[in-house]
Amino acid sequence: AQTVTQSQPEMSVQEAETVTLSCTYDTSESDYYLFWYKQPPSRQMILVIRQEAYKQQNATENRFSVNFQKAAKSFSLKISDSQLGDAAMYFCAYRSARSGSRLTFGEGTQLTVNP
Amino acid sequence: DGGITQSPKYLFRKEGQNVTLSCEQNLNHDAMYWYRQDPGQGLRLIYYSQIVNDFQKGDIAEGYSVSREKKESFPLTVTSAQKNPTAFYLCASSPRTSPSSYNEQFFGPGTRLTVL
View (tube, rainbow over the protein chains, first blue to last red):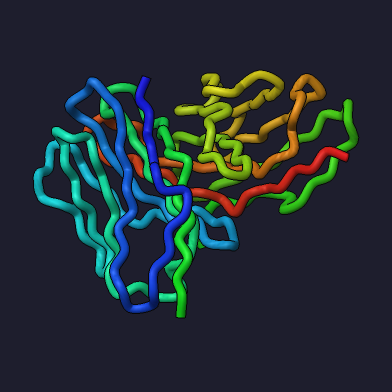
């Protein structure tokens, strides 16, 4: 079974600075998808960024980018120019390309942005 | 507006009672999911359905039941057999399952269930 590990329960960053959240996963498959979701205090889950395993180029969405290292099974999220609205719980998630649509989530990283 | 609605936002239940959480989507998605979220833990899958009239158990299905009679609706019943039901429950949906596409999941606002 696949597992997703987020080793940082809490992180903090100064406004306008850059922060990187870590995620590692365990799988024997070669074709899969990875996601980062954000859960602000409202608890609404919002998709931040996604990556296909067979694409070597790292995904980027405005201030959010990933560092995808397939061999190391690592999928970290970098937030540049951090804003107060980035404060949230961030979840890393994995989906196998073979086993349907279900996601496996990590335990989350609580990000605090200090003014 | 397209989206996923969950009701109620807050729900209180006495021990020994069954309770049903509602989830409706108008995104024309085929697949729907129920997750449970506890403090300090990630989301754990309870049940999911990839097509009407069919559903599968997730990782923590004991004490829960679901139905999928309509594409738009996927209600979750928390039965008295669930020993620790107090939690935050999230419903999600995604387009038709295809191995070669993202099939990203879209989430509802959640229901907070408290057992008194």
